[in-house]
Length: 483
Image: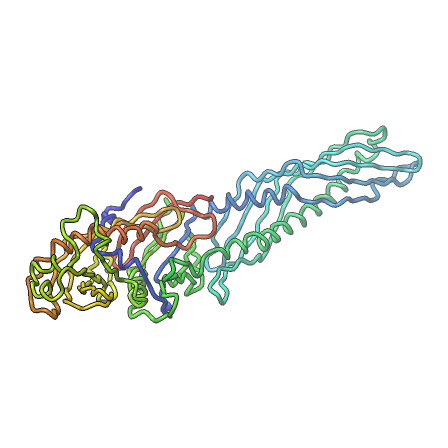
């Protein structure tokens, strides 16, 4: 995996929490930008033509007959061509071109077809039959596709025009004692076949657009599920932008709580960048995208974890009980001897992340509430401490998901409230830091390793990643492959 000069691989602070949620807003500016370059379109063209070639390989050419000749003394003769099957359909050099502010143009040049079949002819008592081969060379096809969006935010593809041209078409007839009778009239038969092939090719291209390409394009996600708490809105906020070198989609890029969709308190920043022609796709990911995650998870009440004694690693040097608290709060031990203690660690406010050219900056506001667990399982609040820290987040991509791993720095504590008098919170810092690294951090990284889905159609995955950060947004450039 390659990384840009900004050394974005390390991002500061529990960006983990930021990535954990998001919310849906009605903003018209994009929180996420997806671009496909000419290199990516060329790859898509190659894959699409493979499908088209299979369709054309199965082209059905109807039987046809007619008056083929009129010879002195013999009068009129008739021909009949049937059982025609495409043996080879070669498309050597397909191209797809961006038409700024309009759509796409698929062009095929120097394609060729070889068709085999049978023929028969008659004139009075004279009859002949045999096989024939039809070679069609220099086939050119130009089809224009119009790109648009529907009311649901899906991309639509419409077939607007098709033009075909054939340079050469030749018939070779074999078999039959009097097959020579139709040899002089090849041109008439070739012209008939030329017209049939013209109409068939454009019809197949048209049908392929509506029966295969359009349904496939609709697999671009509009709403993607992240987990049981959030989803991501990837719907388009503006019409597709078609430039001479890339196709650009501006997406909402907003997480939202599945139970309740609230407007985000922030707005998407401006993301101004051009994709690299060395990669097939470029994805612009704004800090707004991450911050709506933090907002959604905080709103859902899931940015918290309760630590109990049975959750501690076996090699922990302390226990979550009143005896442990007695080292700095003897009043608690005296009033609640030999009782368990619970710690509720939570985000005091929605996590906020800032992307800068130097990387990701993130400073979560967290707090820990301590409780004594009574024999009847009820809880007695003891004290509340604030927690300040910074962290680094290593970000990567895994096929079709964005993933990461968080590394926490030391937690610094501040006493905010106590029901049993003040105490030196520094005495708790070692224990809290141990719990954060041994219990909380692994759970966070488990979530980050699962990641969240990127806006890619079915079967499309990323490889050869390059990350670069700019002011307020991150750019992921990559190539694609199909599964």
